[in-house]
Image (tube, rainbow, N blue to C red):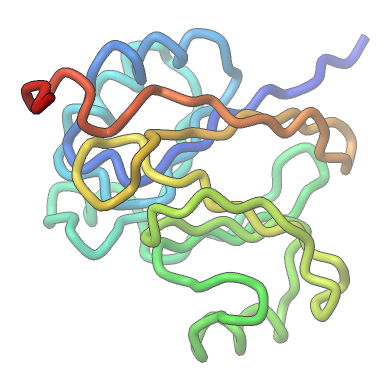
Length: 178
């Protein structure tokens, strides 16, 4: 009997590798990272679990990450064509290079990071393609809530998309100013 593939999607960790992120790695069949890793630490912690890791490098990532991951990652998983890049925009506001690529070869699922804004939506202008940005799992940035996404892939279908909230970006970092 065929098993559903469970995916954990995160982005913009910015060198944050705290247990509230890493404790989730064990529960998924694959871990995907949409760039701005910050350093190799989170990648090394993913590798410990021996699960497939897919990703791209982001604008803050140095050569150590760029030697492992591409700028653009095209792959298929469980019958779903995926295109992942770090800076891509979102439906109605794609950057020009991304829009050209999406029109040329529309995937079933387009993933990017960079904005730190959690979004999951369909693009009716691109064959109802599903767009995902998992927000930011790290503590660096302007976002309030640290987030990741989880979902299932099974025989060409994406299901059970859900947000994982990791807590406030500043929790435990800044003193209470009240």
